[in-house]
Length: 197
Image (cartoon, rainbow, N blue to C red; front, side):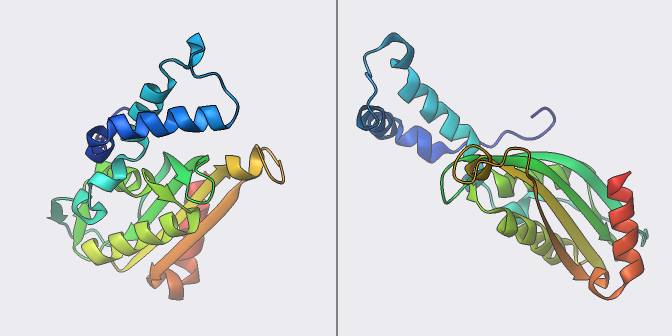
């Protein structure tokens, strides 16, 4: 994803040989011929993919917000349509979508790109959408101590679209609300209205 720091899971690299062996074994167990030309490099490719898609394990998401700035702005700040890709911890199947983050600062702001980095750090690991939503809100609340935080996450889950119930195109929407967004319906409505535009 251009413009977002690439996190790489070094533990995968350290265990490359074992992971490749196990991928090869899984391929055999599902009935594949691991000597077939198209599968010869698959264990190595899967391992390299794991380095990337599980890169979130290498970073403490709280550290991602980095340097904050003292700023008198006490109105709503929104970064919307942050695209994410994650892996369902129940099926190890991909899910993906968009994250919308809004907060009302109380004297401290973060660089806007840091919010996209926070999303990457939280989503690049085995996850569930509900936890992603809460973790982003909790970290924003803990690090920035804003007046309020609201996070909405939209997701399309292949474990639901491509298997099981098989309902492609269905979306899951989760939200987390902290601080003044809990008590002020007008702030919630403003956030929801702006992310729809």
